[in-house]
Image 1 (cartoon, rainbow, N blue to C red):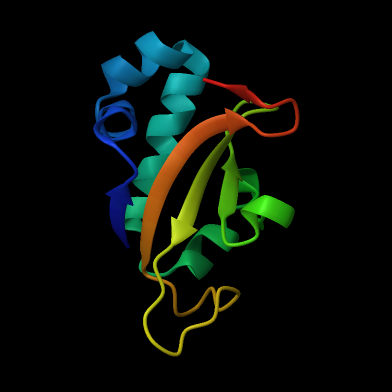
Image 2: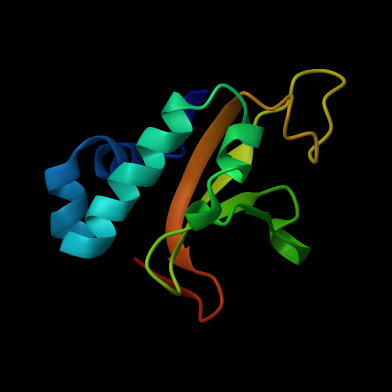
Length: 112
């Protein structure tokens, strides 16, 4: 799957394991690196749905056009599918391009 990033900060955190560990701690930094690797290796978003530990889920309300995968509870890696013409937001077998938005605890609104 092709990955894009909201900004250079999140790009560096996702692509540099050392930076991820510095910014988020060892455990979450390693898990962030793992999740980004899984996303990059997937051909479609459906492949991520098949990884139980990732817990891929579509978000609601103000984030209704976004998905998230679990990191260290309660933090999530949030991303937005970039949809081709005719592809629906819920069509996991057709989504092959995403933009990584942020690492956040959107339950408690604590951004990391």
